[in-house]
Structure formats: structure tokens, C-alpha cells
Length: 355
Image (cartoon, rainbow, N blue to C red; front, side):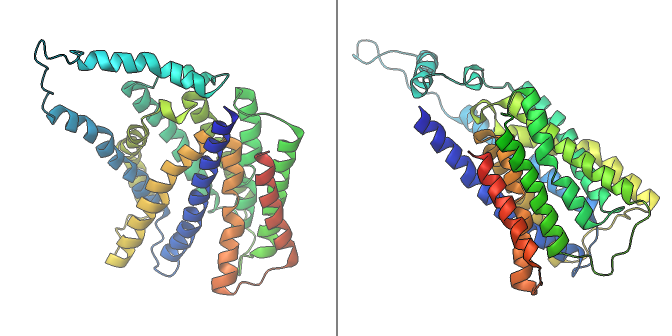
């Protein structure tokens, strides 16, 4: 009943906390890669990270291959007194009992629990569709940094909570309340305080096309709200999804469809293609791919399905004050008092979204 729902929500929050910690570590790793190691290839790094999802296909099909190689169970001899039920009969009996067991767990089963598990074709198509929106959101965010400041990009991307709330409420997967709206606005205000009073671009100058970067950052926030709501609407409950197959489809689609952009970026000189020049750089790229993307996005999806798109969106905003805290502890960054006010606003917004 309600206890089961609370336990599931708590598990989702625990997974979200893991994602936040991984993303904070990944941000320091990528910063070191682009800075100290001098390998400024953001598109290639993103491409490798997303392509790593394709390895989930091994996990999706390995159990099936094992079942195909497993020898058939011996049949009971007639008259032995044992039941002569076939495996299909047992499976059919379990399927008939499963809805009853699910119905006893809650007084009013959620609509997602009444829906069948997504088929292989539906899962693959969902992965391809999601991959397109996901990649567009990441590309627009990265591209915004070429035209506007890191501060402006961070602030505008933090408005993804507002887009998630509005789009999710329109789609029927979020509750639009004054408290939740206030939480979103408090989160944006907190990010503003953190960015303005906690980090300053050293030697930064005004960029003539800053409005282009600001528009791209805002578009990235809107696309995030779209794809997180899209997944919640199409999946509903994590039990309906073959998650390895889904992420495997995302990775395979990325490998097949996105590589022409690498060629275009090289031809135009925007990002000349260059493989990592040393084992250390390769190690950083692969660690970021397999921990910062391969693992963390899997946990992110489960956390979102166990809680809600808005809870996860506001929870991920915690990466900003935590990243700044890392700079304060390890790099001696000096911050003004409003930074701490902003950090408390972001934390309060996350707590309010869970009420």
C-alpha cells in the first residue's frame, strides 16, 4: 500500500543521490580532460560516452542466449505421482497470479501497472526516439558555451525544472501546485546566487553573440523537460521496460546516425578530429564514458521512474552547489555569503518537490 510506495520513492532518491555524486565527479574529470590534459574534444567525448550504451545489448541478449543453450528439463514418467505440468502451463499459471499479487500490494493500482511490458520492437523504437531528443539537448547545451558564458548557460539550463513541471503537468505525469512552482523558482534563484557569487570566469569578456548562446541554453532546458516527460509517459513504471535493451538501442542509434556530424565538424574546422594522444587521456575518456554516462544514466532512468521527472530534475541541480563545494575544498575557491544562501535554496527546493 502506501508503505510500498514510500519505500519505492526512497529507493529512487537513493539512486538519484548516487547519480548526483557520479555527475559531480564526472564534471571534475571532464574539466581536467579539457584543461590540464589539453584534450578539448567535447563532441567526440560525448559521442564515445553515448556509444558506450550499445554494450547494454550484451546484457539484453545474454540471458536469452543462455536459455537457448540450456538443455530441456527431464519429463516425469507417467504414474510417478508427480505433476505433469509443462513449463508453459507453469508460466501461464504464474502470469494469471501476477495481477492478483500486484493488486494486493495497492488498493488502487497505478495505470502503468495495468499496462503490458513493452515489446522488443517498442523498446528499440523508444530508444531511438529518446536518443534523438537526448542528443539534441546535450548538443545545444554544449554549443551554448561557445557563444555565452558558463554562468549564463548554467542559470538558463537550470530552468529545465520549470519546463519539466509545465510539460509534465500538461501530460498528466506531474502535479502542478503552488508549492512545486515555488520550489522550481527557488531552485533557479539558488543557481543564480551560486553562479554569480561562487564562480567567476577569469578574464572573461563579453561575447558579441551571447544571445545565441542564451537561446541555445534555454532550448536545451526545454528539450530536457520534453524528453524526461516523454519517457515517463511512454514507460510509466520501470517494470514495463527492458532497460538494457532500451539503452543498447540508444547507443546503437548514436553510433549509426551521429558519426556524420564528426566528419562535418572536422571538415569545417569547428572540432578537428583527434584521437586521445596518450593512455592517460584514453583512460579519462573511458572512465567518463562508463561511469559518468553508462552507469549514471541507467541509475538516472530508474530514479526518474521511481520518483518523478520534477524530483529528479531538481535533484540534479544539487550537482551545482556540490561541484562548487569541491572547488572550495580542493582548489581554495573563495565565495561570497550569497553562495551559501543559493545552496540552501537549491536544497530546500529539492525537499519541497518531495512533499
